[in-house]
Image (tube, rainbow, N blue to C red; front, side, top):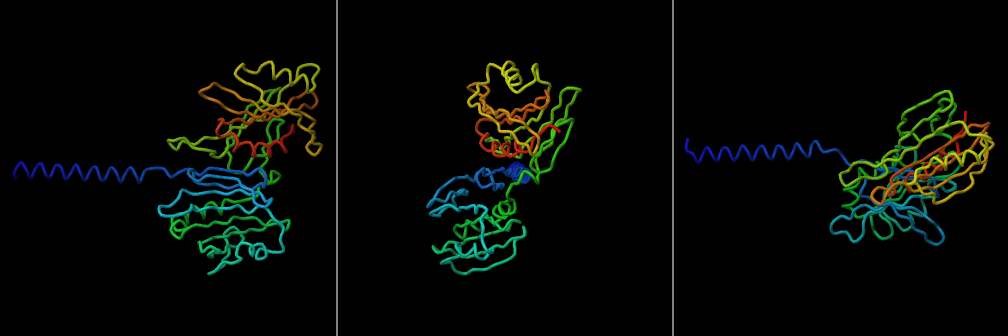
Length: 327
């Protein structure tokens, strides 16, 4: 065997190894995480890919949320998904008429989530998918996707996942966690964290689903802490508020301080809700904290996330605040 042939064989083997390594890297790469979103106004929640943007619009007095996928090469407009807020209608077909009007090539099939899905070309000729599902109170909700044939093909699986994740969030149906005199409801899928208690104090923690991603695809989450502790004399709300203020770090700034109305349905008295900024110019977080007092015991619900992800956490926390209580 000549030197040239040996060198050629070595190059071929090295080339084959590089190709195998490239395939292994692609095969082992983790899939993009799904981000969680809750629209505070409609109560609709869903998951979506990180590169899809969530927007808000208003047309003829109607406010709605929409998503936009990355534009496919050659398309004049990006694939979009418009959310259908819970709406009263005589039936699913009656509500669908407004979206099907002027359309063509309409086909209908049952949706896996119990509703109905229509595939059609809308009045402008773009391929569309409309999925509507019923609620128990006579309302219907769903989503309408439209885009080029190539975009609909490319994003089909992502649309399937988004449609299947769509739901109307009702905190009264969330699982209830009860621990050491505390009771709270948190969304399904959230991580139940540590539980700590002593004769006078107790804490339980929750971790949200992914809210955002870093450039490295590392996920950003929100954290919720529910706790109770004794209130210093005279044991009322003002004493509790002062105690919390006195032990607050110098890096925390209160941006809003508002009353938290009482709720007799969960035996919770009036309290306060504070919105705060914490951190430095390099690392900044946002915190919303609810407090109340009953029989000399203070209740705290604290929600915290990085500043650029807090707006996604806040709607979930507002719903958690409706049901949190001293057990």
